[in-house]
Length: 490
Image (cartoon, rainbow, N blue to C red):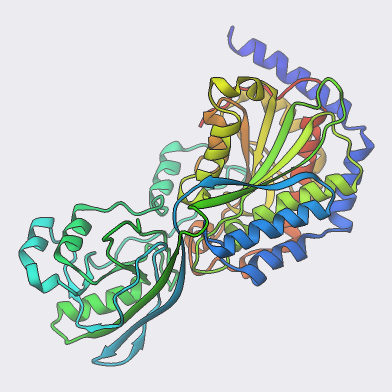
């Protein structure tokens, strides 16, 4: 009980602070600016329709980063700039041919994995199906694999068929076993690990590897090839088309495929990728050097337009900052925004920024001035509440901030943590960071990292709501007498 009592006292005090802030007329201005004069559409449409996919370190991502920097600058934010960090080679897919040409013609649904090497021209050949064979068995095949179109996976039978549960739903109960099971069905992190089987195929001189997607109904979940020297070109097929070919080969039906991958690597920029940073300065002489930060990742995979992952999140924080500026906000603390690169490759952009600006003994003073980071990534749609990362000390405060927004469709916060996005970079550095609860219907199953991550998956009014919630939380944190309690966990 001794450990609970101080937290309870702090929560009561936090509610009192929240109530005291509720009379701030700027809160009503934030809501009216975001809902009555939104500027969501031009940002979201430019990122998705004009630019399209924004793979880290690609020319398209650089173009998106420069456009966002200029957009933030046009809103009047201070020090809108790009921050380079070392990533490695950029990559674009220039062309892919993927067809079955015998015993009948069938155009195949598939995409080269990010950073796949190009094939050495067009390959027309019978595929070699070796699904389930050990590295030793593959090595014994020898010359049969040299220059071949190889299918190393068994017929696909396991698919991502469930979206993660939503902790804001009525009747939801924490079930870590179920959550762990759901997480195991989601795609693995980038890049795919070079397994002993893949190493054996590389050693045998395979020309290209075809693999089945973990999605179904034509949904192709595509991640990355390691792209290193000697890497075998790789293509992910829709599971159904992969299975058609595999079954035909198993039944000794002569099959012939045509495969051609053309891709380009980029080294001209010194291997750099870019984060976008801008800020609204604080005005309180005692607190203006402290920082409240919000952010989202700007990069996406190359198979669609990255609408839900994460153009909607990027648009949300850009719009939230615009709302604050247009509403005349004069926060006590500085409010900073970041649009990260490299999230899809392992939170690399945010990790790099945190390492440079917050982590370690050299950044102790900056870390002590850092208040809180609000991220938005996992899911799509409106904000329903926040994952509190097991930080019971903020529950009363965040519940108090959420309550006046319930007319906008927010529901509740949950103590549970959520991983797999840029807030973890900040938590690892020892500062509080949070990600909101959003909608997961057809997110894991249909849109995340797939060819179906298109504008049809997003409602712009949901982004308007999310921007209002994000702006409200950032402003309220920036106006508090004290910093956000730092007791968060992964």
